[in-house]
Image 1 (cartoon, helix red, strand yellow):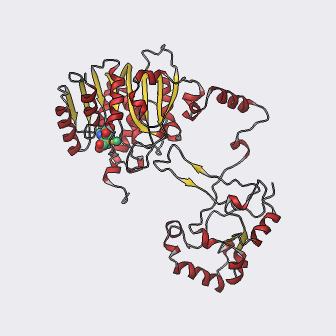
Image 2 (tube, helix red, strand yellow):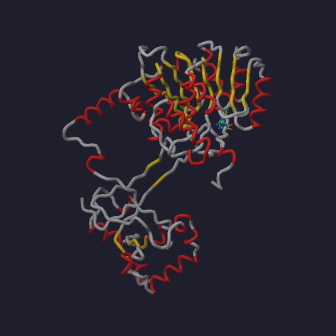
Image 3 (cartoon, helix red, strand yellow):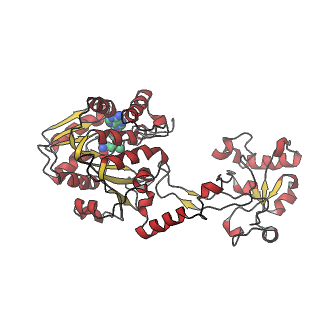
Length: 432
Ligand SMILES: C[S@@+](CC[C@H](N)C(=O)[O-])C[C@H]1O[C@@H](n2cnc3c(N)ncnc32)[C@H](O)[C@@H]1O
């Protein structure tokens, strides 16, 4: 928490005006008389309304919790010639809950970019309000949630039937488990949903992946729901297109896709059918039906813990050494057997994992000397090492009959972090 900046804690990253203008053009297609901006920041969307034109008489309601930003938004709306705008310097969710209780959806359109703040970082009263939104909509709640989830839920709840909601939202909406309630709710409430999914990051200075969510609420419960479409984009060329063409372009899919993770919508029809066919096949099993997955160990200092035979010999560490390979190029193929292990060792590759304090054994003088060398190199101050005690005992070590080396880039972010991971596969003898 201490390391979180004030900007991050209020989710204060603003929408580039060209993206906001695209969104404004999309909602303008239904000639909205009333528009909601639930977390308006300094007014990026008001600038967009000015750029797009045609909003000067629209009744716009903006919310902004931060007093300074709310004043900026007010000035921005005025400067943008939006004569019928009200900026409320208060919590949007609390206000939305009151509207929901009165049962009066009223906005023709909602635009914005909700705050991205983890539930655990929200002040207690806001946590309570966020949870109440789920309750009011009778949706399962989890503390893994993030402020943007309740903002989209509440915004959708105060949108009139047939209205349009368009927001810049974290790309996690596509797949994170904690947003399942939101995905299901949107699937039920909307005639059509489209995600504009960019290859690039839109927010300078952050690693947060974002997408544009375009959602049109069903006119009535009998209105057919078309489902979800994905519209992948590269660069900003799409901003020149007519927004409704973008909205209607992707083939929307329904059923399992809208109810579950939206990643299915990224597959083409043929691949999806093959996937479903295989999933229903008697002899094909889901991975989690036959295996348990655990991550590999994290040493925090691979060069220190993963060493060649020479180091083991010189420092008399045989007692602590376990056979291991740590890189995919140490296993050329799918079988890692003793012959491969010995060939690696003969080639001076690091084939020994040093596991100190196995089964409660006390470190001996040789190990102590080696550990001291690590401390001389300040390894004990590295993050992964200093958060465990003692720093030189690597946790979660186990051997498996089968191991997988994974090399994964998380395209849709991991709470904002894109990361490469290359866990070490630890095996005593891998003989598949
Ligand atoms: C991601 S920024 C987006 C601002 C603007 N919508 C834009 O697109 O540039 C989110 C804004 O929500 C504000 N905010 C955070 N919690 C809020 C709340 N409970 N009610 C209203 N505004 C809030 C933050 O201060 C921040 O300015």
